[in-house]
Length: 571
Image (tube, rainbow, N blue to C red; front, side):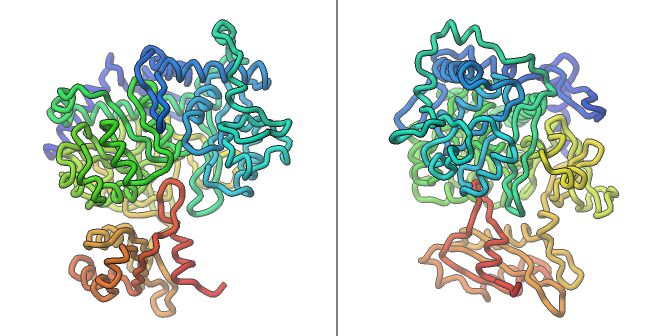
């Protein structure tokens, strides 16, 4: 057993032993047995109750607005009161949220789940058709949205009542301004309002739509228990990170600055909702919310707000740490920069160590359906295992299977199946997907990966992205990570294109700055790959551009659009 594996297992054993806050045991939920945190809350109201104890401590910063924990909960309680008494929202009713990252988004989510209703976060990047389809699919009873989404959706046309955040101008009869809804609710009335029925762990809390990078988004249905187990899992992962990097965290604590996270990602995905918002609200940590992602603005906030934690998609973090502004920024309080949501390039950890030596790099793997649970690690294990996505989370079980659902040999790449109390039981209104994607409590992720001898996860790629060139398997992520390390390269997308002789060939599209456009050539890229990869993995086709690649809201490259743009095929 390696020293790294031994250290991790010792920490995990201490954290999860009987009598500890993160005690783990086997539990049966709806006929499915899995590991679970035995001391985790059962409902969202119970989960978030500790946040109420922080009173006047600063919770949220948004541009020139600042909110204490007490002010935040006062607003969410007032809104919950109005949802029940004014809008007639009952337990189990679906209430949709469609807005950019505003403070009112956070207030709305807590109010909805506290009232017993089901929160339905919608992709604020969505166009009219997608948003209306999601509203219909979720059977929303009420919409809470900002002015831009009001103009996009036009809820009056759907005969749907709406609460409008930061409204501009007169509203139609079915719409009410957010501040008007909160006004006139005295604190005594708020205290008397309870959910319209008792809430249990098995009751639905949220419907979150998948990103849809490979098709139409599906509504993932989370119970209160799913959400609670997921947040406690993030706490356990944080405790593991602390114990494995105790000297670094203790040295940082001596600075005396408050813990403060930079919210860089949309709240309608688990990375923003769970890892940034709910985790910090429960544990008394501050959030600085960005109007939109911009690395220059992020650097300004890191300096001015003394940010301690930055979490984001690897592509965002690469943009950040490679910027001149990051080099010049005051990073004295920065202790952690973590990537997740996509495979984390080795280069990111190297740049973090170079540009912010006091900050610990982090990496992880998870997805919407798993409630962000999966694998993770922080600090020295990241540098000890370059390219890995972390240790398996305490309440997560993994299988690696072939196309027939049979487990492959240890250390062999296969489709990752995951079981955990954080994993949803299914999608709404999607019987075919539920039948194909779920099996006896296991969710088939569609990702390809393996565990090494230290039980560290390595992600190879998405199963659907696998390139088979003349019978040889090529995982695009490996190619992308290789090319990403070429100086001047900003972003890479690798994928298959049809070939009459080989079935498929490998193509890549690379973005760089305008200044570097003439320095990079297809030949130099191919030569670079030849020196580092097997010959069959060298891309046959290389296109280089200074135009950024199309991305979704979580900064993942939408490869089907890239392929259509640069390698269109007939039909």
